Length: 323
Ligand SMILES: *[C@@H]1O[C@H](CO)[C@@H](O)[C@H](O)[C@H]1NC(C)=O
Ligand SMILES: *[C@@H]1O[C@H](CO)[C@@H](O)[C@H](O)[C@H]1NC(C)=O
Ligand SMILES: *[C@@H]1O[C@H](CO)[C@@H](O)[C@H](O)[C@H]1NC(C)=O
Ligand SMILES: *[C@@H]1O[C@H](CO)[C@@H](O)[C@H](O)[C@H]1NC(C)=O
Image (cartoon, rainbow, N blue to C red; front, side, top):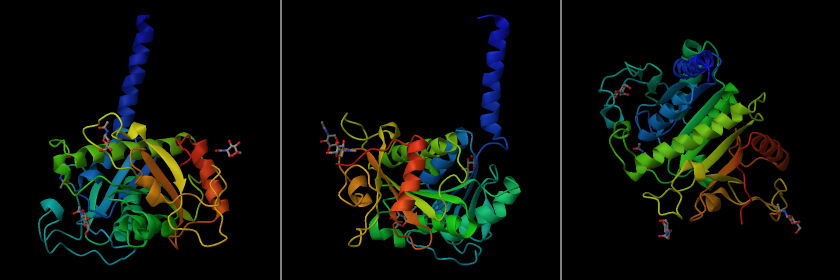
């Protein structure tokens, strides 16, 4: 290689690194939220993975665990007790941020309020515009079937999609428990390893959507509910242990009413498989993708399913049939 060519290749690599670090205005803008709280390992792993991949990310999540709070909303109030895992002292203001990285924010209210704060207050400050996408999760534990009505993860995604018109996706992972983000650097627990794998899967999913541009990013009026399979560490060869092994099945949340047919794929007899069945299938390493109405939180009709399915296959999401 001639030295001038070498130099320009190095310059390109260097510019690539710089652009990944400084997240230029052209990078997709993401608001990241959850219902388990701003200081969990899962949401920080997700923040780190998206940021490292070059996304322009703001984290806005509850100050403590608000799991199961559905679409509840309330004005944020100052902290009576410390934030979860002592991540802020009692008496802290209703909204706060990490002093060394001001993109990491808490809101002392519900997931819906944290999502709204990220979209309406923080996005104008950091992006000078609305975000391109809202990511809720990955949640600690599955959000499948009727549990989606109680889920704060789903509640926050519906808030982003319904009230702000932002493409919103909810992610959940089964094999995790509550751990502090401070364990990320020091622990190899299965929760920490799972948090890193789930974060990597979410990042790959979002990269695929932005890699094949479409306006809007997904059809409107919906959210996606994505459930990751359970992971096993250490891996024994046949178990699921890496995000790179994940494939996805297009699913529904609740059993269909009589005479209701889903999008016609895979020779399923009338209806898609249930997300609860698919995401808990042993040894298959399958994630489930369900399209939910952003207001009713119910499965959408076959036409909307088809529009979303076409978009996801077009973006190269690895979809497979379930049997
Ligand atoms: C704030 O960020 C710094 C640097 O990333 C980290 O060391 C610290 O633990 C964080 N604190 C909280 C409460 O997020
Ligand atoms: C939050 O609470 C739920 C159930 O109450 C629990 O399953 C989850 O692990 C908790 N999360 C955290 C971060 O404490
Ligand atoms: C590997 O681990 C999975 C999940 O724990 C288990 O179901 C399977 O039987 C194991 N396989 C072997 C070959 O040990
Ligand atoms: C559906 O069934 C038909 C007829 O048995 C078969 O030719 C086709 O390959 C099947 N498609 C899928 C996706 O399994």
